[in-house]
Image (cartoon, rainbow, N blue to C red):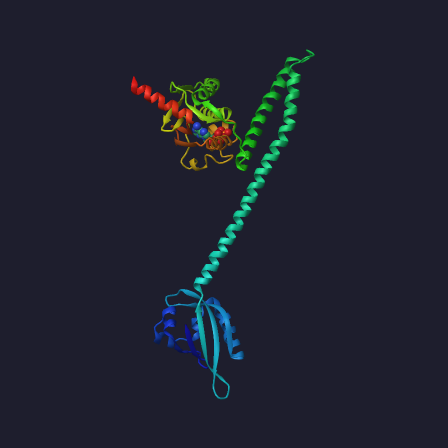
Length: 372
Ligand code: ADP
């Protein structure tokens, strides 16, 4: 837009149509305004120095300021001013070419914001890598002395010289038990570090999920009995072949069963069910425990998260189990989900894809069923 100003009075004396359109004022409104009024209040002192410079030099190049528009808004502009002089050389008018820079300024702001986000993001990634590295190193460093400690406790408890008193044997038992607990915790920390670093290895072969579940349930029975809880099993009669790591799948089931017991009161029931869903097997573990509140649900698979309730305070735990088993399930091409109602119980569902052999067996059992 172009605006011409009487330097003596400061009033706008001429302008083009773009000035009306961009600034929103009618022609007669603009002609009743002083140019100074066009500058945004935050730029008024800048405006004074621009106008002073113009009176001294007779030109201004690319002055970046804000102009007010009708209705109270503002636009970013670049102002270039040239002088018209009378025969004595005195400046009588200014002719200003003003470019609307709002879009460019906005684009620069967005770009600046994107750059800042990008650098913050890189910093977060770097810190996260450092955290994983720290976790992994500390766990390794803890494991070595602990292995030695447990090995010597084991040798001592064999009592080859026959000199251990019953009290000493009991105390050695405490050392070994706590050492094993610590070993489990270190293994969990290492698993989380591996999962975060993407170096979680699984050792796959053809495994029968039904068999793995049966063994894990057998091992978990004593935990449930200790708390006077029931554990029931609902398994299909045929095998369910998947390609997977039996130790890791067993870890998934054990963890879910231990949680079902830990976060339930006595005299409650937990059901373990396996069923086929198209090309996948669905393992469901349904407990009648304390459940998980709606606000805790989104935090459930985050490292070190433990709900704040009486049972979690009473039961030992690290908040790492669910993170680890989620990684294991996903490495097997599966998913893990949970449904829960606080005070009523939780249902964890693990979906795992059947192997080629598993699919063939499933197809065979349907054919047998139809033929019979
Ligand atoms: P940990 O049991 O060692 O605390 P997990 O990662 O296995 O760690 O579980 C994280 C948290 O999720 C638990 O502390 C508990 O608050 C909640 N949780 C897990 N399973 C259940 C369940 N079956 N019922 C109620 N809460 C559960």
